Image 1 (spheres, one colour):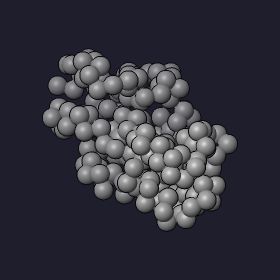
Image 2 (cartoon, one colour; image 1 turned 90 degrees about the vertical axis):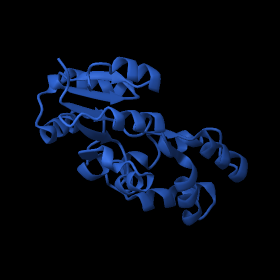
Image 3 (cartoon, one colour; image 1 turned 135 degrees about the vertical axis):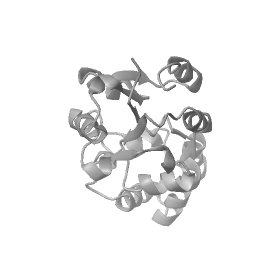
Length: 197
């Protein structure tokens, strides 16, 4: 049996982290080797940002202060370098888009996600976007998956959830969804043969 709803993670699937961003912070701004953990670790302001307790601007200002640069400069660096579009994935999804299958994003993100997807030119891929910063819930909290199912109006057994982290996959499986751990474009497209056609 095929699927009626494809739930997609954004970071690590639709957009990919750019290692040049971290290299730039280390070589040009003296950031420590663990700078990525500094930005996104559990002890950073990120967990509060991703559920909307602080804004993207507040979060970025705190990180800029730790790095000894202006918030405006860090915002520009993040916009220019931090993420890049996974164009093979975007192109494939557009080519295989079945009008009977809805695509819904479930993303642990900040309040700028929708603006960023618009700037990247990919927001049209999604019928709905479940943004953790807007709903106050983040993966792997089972409640965000239940919310997504309610939005989809689809039984879980007719849903496929794709994420690059196994930790985020497990709650979807427990709810009865099909799942796929994204580890690269070619493996993904091979696994999807027959599901999205």
